[in-house]
Length: 94
Image (cartoon, rainbow, N blue to C red; front, side, top):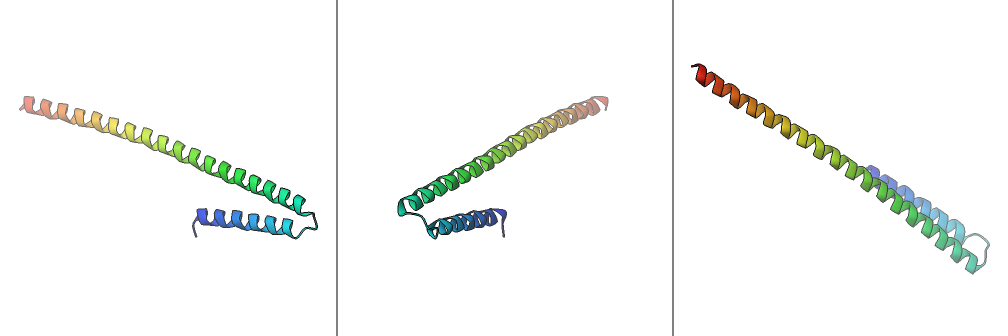
């Protein structure tokens, strides 16, 4: 089971439990609806924050990989240039 599915299952289970707890509580209908709306808002905010954090982490990782790739390419170009110069030196030495 992937981490994403596990987290989704936990969030869904918590939301279902909270809603059922509110529905079976001995409150007036208006109070129950207010509580359900509040829990829904809280859950929506939690999901948005989770996705925002995940997007930030992915963006950060992407930038890190991009920088590493640029560095590797630069080193490769330097080695290629060095090898060409060495080849030219060897040809002139012959």
